[in-house]
Image (tube, rainbow, N blue to C red; front, side):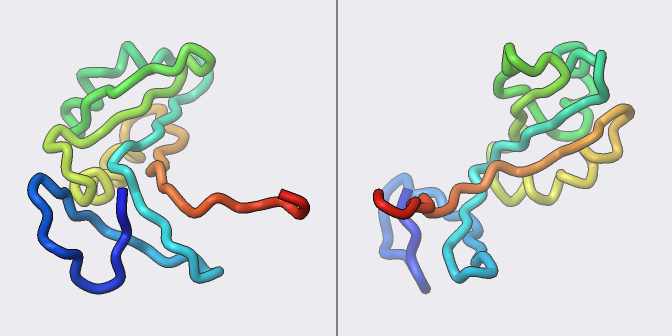
Length: 111
């Protein structure tokens, strides 16, 4: 992944997407993947049809969190995933729907 300020140079097969700036001035880049967490006891794998109806497909089901799923928009377009967050949050028993965002690595003192 490369982040450019202004227009990116043309590249074959490149995918463009939004880039945000954090309060500290660093770039924050959404990946198009969203972490969805249902209420305790609700198995996310059993909600595939509802997620699909909301415009998302299940990317993976983390074994350590059976009430959660990583999803992406059916189109695979990052902006579609961001626009669809409100649909995910309105699904029955969804407690959280948060986009995955990449930022620069924070370094600790002494690293």
